[in-house]
Image (cartoon, rainbow, N blue to C red):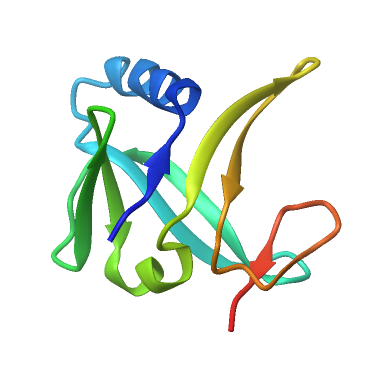
Length: 108
């Protein structure tokens, strides 16, 4: 079971984690949204739930709800600056389609 961070994403997440002394890690979840079905829901985790799976990459603890792992297994998370916008970008090998704006994805 893996998720991968680019160096840029890991540095940005490490910055966010350093701002919160109660942070347990970076939660990567999904929720129903957008026109394709699933969207990424990321946050600084304050708690680790009993159904969470803990992964580690580049010194960052990634916390993933067990029921989301199948849909995002193998995803690479990048952090990009595009003009004045700064966003996390996901390369998910399980995605069979994405909406035009890139906000949501589908899987089989």
